[in-house]
View 1 (cartoon, rainbow, N blue to C red):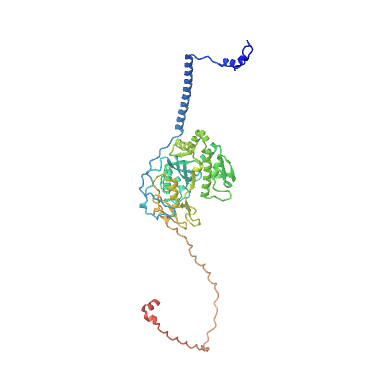
View 2: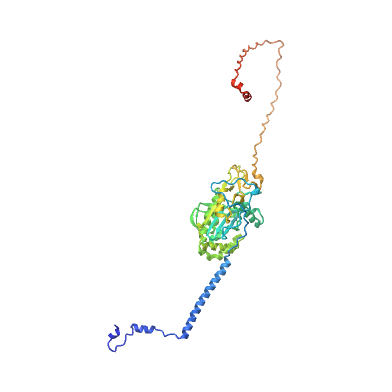
Length: 473
């Protein structure tokens, strides 16, 4: 029932009641022209918003095309026609081959057009020798990567006296020739030629660490070394902490301690692998894509490559937005044997490939082609047990003298020392001989001659076998 009927006769409605509020909130209806103008304003606002979004999108596309550019795969070699077979676990390597049996490197059909391979290396500041070398295969579609480090003391089949892999690049005055020579030698180890090369200045590592705000890393050991000639001073304590760019450079360059001890090349590679994982984990965070200008400047100054900076940044963007994680990148070292460490060994301390294991990791993790790599695509060195001679899986050494054992110098026999002549003495006069015969005692009687043994009886067996006498003579 309405409350209006309960009010006293003649009483006015309560001005604070709901009816009064509705009366004040009501708006007069719009005329057709006003409604039309309002619709036009709304359409204009929407169009301005759409135009703004389009401008932003276009700018983003232009910036992306400016900073990120997908590279084109270089033309690969034609297929060698070799059967798609490889060594299986438990099989032994093929015997030494004749040089004419060497086949071209694998090529032809790739497993995917999104698989790329790289040769990454850096040079030592002091010696100029190649300090670190890695073969990298990156499957962009599946976001998987494999990184195989090549020990710098790996022996290769070359004519020059220094047969270590790290001496290839520096053996050429022209850097372009050095790069091609290094790619060629690496192809002898892996059976295919990497698509691209990336030569880095190790200062890039430190500057990248600074750019991304530092890296948390567990330093595996105390590192203390000073070399005033290189202005190199390394002082890092063992333990987990956040490293800046200078710390990073000390970690990757450490090899010797002030106390004279040194870590092996393989141990050093392991430390570098762990550190690169830490850097990768920090770099692959999406917020670092805001530092694209700074990273582009670093790559432009610190990287030499047949890739453009835009190509390198494209790979980085694919890794970040594609979800590549540290666990998706596998780091390992080329399977190898160590040469003899005997102080007299000619190739003391050098390493050479473990053929069976190397073929396995090549085909399972690195080879971008459908064709399998076999021993016939490789030129691998072996070292003799004493560490003094080399042989090649091709059967031919570029330096034939490397297969000849060195001449061992034996000391020449020394002549006995000359004795001094006896001192001269005055002559001694002898007594005169007697003129009369002197009787002497007769010689003692000799024992009678022994009796001769009786002749042996003939052996019937010997008489029966005429050849027995001849055999006993």
